[in-house]
Length: 188
Image 1 (tube, rainbow, N blue to C red):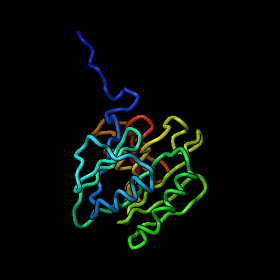
Image 2: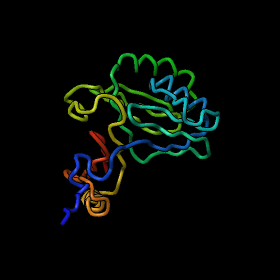
Image 3: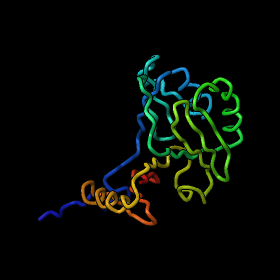
Image 4: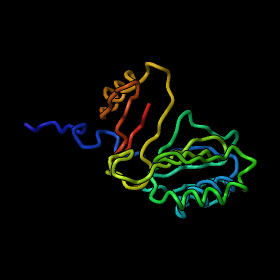
């Protein structure tokens, strides 16, 4: 008799990777200024290079940025791990004037640079240090997507991901943490 293989026993559970975040943007030029020139990410030259869509690489993950109205604003934040805060701040300073008529902003805090894209999405850029976001297991890239949810929703969300997806999920201190790949998470 053959044993049933339990995929949920794998290190990453049933969600293998946080591959990309889709955000509709209103203007590819402004998106390029923010994501490529400002954040220092790389436009994927193999994924539909045109003036109405863009894929931007960030480590193993991507932002998918199709053009459309209205722009999408995530109710939450995207967390990136970066390697050079000083260069990030220089790049953001360089695009500040060009994005001055938008919702673009950035501010430096301890261990993180909080950025706001031209349409209001918050992207937190964490320093790549062993004691930061992922305990050093994740070097550079998209570490998490955090969604704002109603108070008391974290535990039921974690239970949903455990029961329906069969993945690792926990709830503590009013926050649900769902494994979404190696050193990647969805936070609620």
